Length: 197
Figure 1 (tube, rainbow, N blue to C red):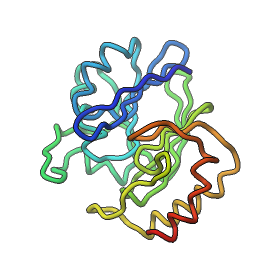
Figure 2: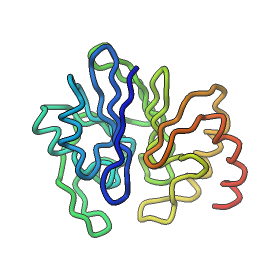
Figure 3: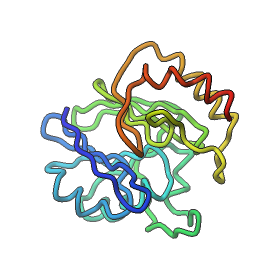
């Protein structure tokens, strides 16, 4: 697995290109990501969204059209792809594959899984590969996603954190903002966040 990333837009949202067997998956192409993706994803096969906030999905529509790629997102966040968010009218995009709860997907012999951790948004997910997690805005290094936005749910986030604390393996975690971390490192702070929410 090869991972390249670049922070995009005012919110410095990490866009990732994950390449396995010379095929690339694009994760969270945010504001201004399209040209960078087209320059660096040599054989792209799909767009994966950890959740639906505009700074993570802004370039979905352009990349879908320009590269003829399917867009994959959890069903509970699909509405975000067409919705004016926080005064930001995103380029509307019709998703192609909707994830229900949790699901393992195989595209051109590359397998990955959507793990549902709602709270930041209703359909917030971690995208899990054998070698790594891409956590979007669920967890960051030393922090978690905000729960004071429209459609956020603090109680759902608490349930998600408890579920996260029960994960019994370690992997690198590549978040939607900031530097990478690991599952075990962030599990150390679950009790703090449960009390802080």
